[in-house]
Length: 352
Image (cartoon, rainbow, N blue to C red; front, side, top):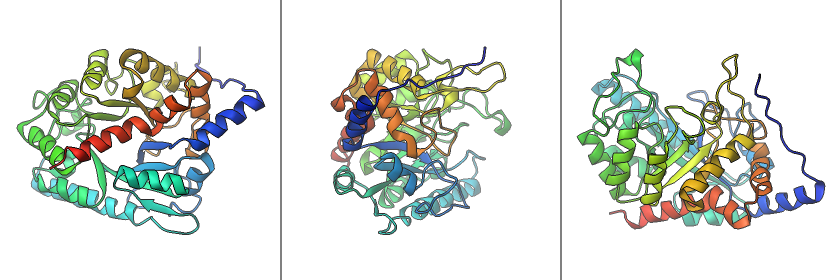
């Protein structure tokens, strides 16, 4: 039978109260990709799932836009090209700040993000996805931080010089493992990320490397876009041991709107998910490791999007589903940004 997610009907008065809570919440989506190199102006209406008009329409106050670099050969030339791409993307995203037709500002600290939210200015944040862009040059991490990046995802799909990945790339010649988790360089990279104030993102990292990173990092690690393996057996999801490890180090899993991470595919091979499926994963993680270690993200424009939260303009429907399940204003604020802000502040406080 085809999985056909449906959204519950909420009476108008209750919906109005949910909308008021959503409007007062600092909503932060911690993982959104951008088209590259052809990137339409996000201050205009675009075909992207996230642009600034859609953020305004959906009450989404801040987004971590991603300088994503796909995995390639482990050669000096390829590493240099990957680094140049990541840095060009960071600069291009930062350059979308402006005053008209809506105010949007680059935020590189939690205080700046909170100030933007308080004054109604959209917040632009930056991240780098795939430590492949670092190559073997640790100094690139400090450069990325100076350009405004707040986190680095250690791998993407395919083993890189830092760590094994959760999904090896057979087309790149990957064996099931390359390093047995983190490499010696990867361990040095995590120490350097700690030093310069970059959050360690363990999304995409092999289970072995993720557990090693959680133990090694002086700051709590975050999976910025992942779901619970107990509910959906997918190599990108975190099992109970990994969830427990996040809790034990003060870390965070950001449940993400990727249908294939949330539900099993239907008979036609397509995964069809809704905000209710996202909330199921939130519920599971909260029961397992506590509300302080769970958050939300979309992975929009990188494959994310579920019924009820197809783009940034409908962000309030995810809040409504969580509120309908009994989460209050305080819990919603923790899920949307409070937990991430706590870890970000810890990361900056322990830098140096």
